Amino acid sequence: MRLLEMDSQEKATLQNCRNCLIEDLDPTKCFLAQLHYSNILTEDQRDRVDKQMTRQDKVVTLMEILPRRGPRAFRQFVQVLKTDYNWISEKMEAELNIQEYTQRIRNAVEERMRLNGEILRDKDYILKVLSETIVPIVLQEVSYISPTEGPSEALDQPLKDLISDHLIPLIKGPNRGKLKLDSLHYETLLTKISDLLGELAKRCRTSLGLDSEDEAYKEYSIPQLIEKRLTDMKVEILAMKKETKKVKKVEEKLTAENQKYKTETKNFKDEVKRLKSDNQTCRQECKKLKDDLKKSKTESEKLRLEVNNLKELLDSNGIDLRISSEFLYT
Image (cartoon, rainbow, N blue to C red):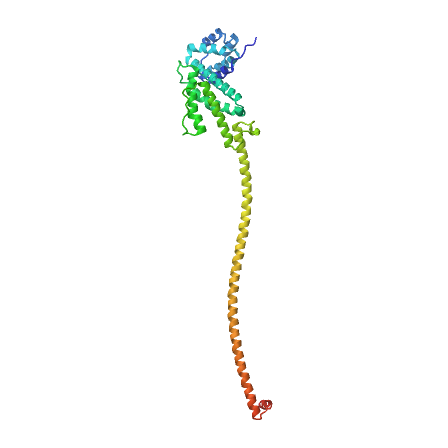
């Protein structure tokens, strides 16, 4: 007949205490006999463990067998350890308490999420926060619990510290004061933590520029949404880089054309300046020519008058000017 396996929390406790067992436990023949006598191991299993060559191999083999030895094997194994390995049994009992507390926290959050449908899509994210943030803090606090405290009393203060020192500053900022949590117990505190995680998830979506009511995002957890947003931003940045590259090329082309036009403009200005200078010179020469022409006209008119006077004088004296001219050249 096949035995039922250990509870999942007990299996997790064994796994988490694996290093401690490998380092400190010595499965001697006497110890293995106690396990056999307590119906934790069969005779064949006892011999199988004992035949291993090293102490570590014996512990590893024993840990492979224990999870399949039924629902009472873990408790019986812890009882046997109390005789010679009390510190290991205490560590395993404390670890089992943590596993139970963790499961209770998860159950409370899942129940809260079931009632509050708006954050149901963030289940994976919230459970991730529980596993990586809340449970380690509770584990640290519970390790200092007095034996006289009950589970709920032991959890109250760590959960209050978690809310006041971690969640409230994360959501509302470090200087927004503290909530009045003195009269609250762990059930109410767990509900409060769930509400704060829901608000944190909502703010994360808002910060990502997402609509909380958009159906398209319900299937994603917050880390997935962040990753998706980062991917979208990388695509946008890549597109902007390509566009910037194109704009830069256009800018370089326009700069070259502008430089060309500046050079041509300078040449035109120099040409205009030269033409203005030439024009000024031409105007001066024209003025000089006009003055010379006027002077020549004046002299020509004077000579014409003199010629006319001479003609009249010669005519009055009976001298033929044409004959006289011919005479002169003979």
